[in-house]
Image (cartoon, rainbow, N blue to C red):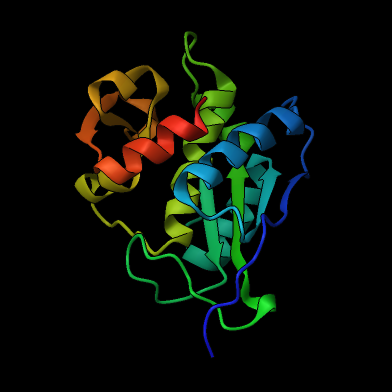
Length: 187
């Protein structure tokens, strides 16, 4: 059976914490732009914002790491090749999975001159990359997965990669098809 064509699907952003003020509409708007740019807007996606205690609990249960973290991803489609868009045969399979954002952890690691919502978007994009099959076990691999288009660098035809704990920005070349997608999404 072939893939079923489908219109834009839901993006659910839930805020299950009270440690950090959060405007869900602002985060939702930014994540929607990323979904459009990556061509995955026809898939359901859940983004759940939690505090340090909850992200640490989830990290301990699923990764055996008893520490808070910035993002954890739970893909609906397992064993995707890096960057592969799922090709579901059934309507119920148009789901990418869920991203848990440790918004308290992210807020605590933001620098003074950084926009909190931009960092949330970078982190959510990192989680989305995991849902699309990207993985990392080294810092070099992390840099690759952390690579996202950056509006202020579109004139260079590159993307910015936010390093671990926001240690800087690196520019990587974008394929021409991705340049067009990002420019259209960021308009």
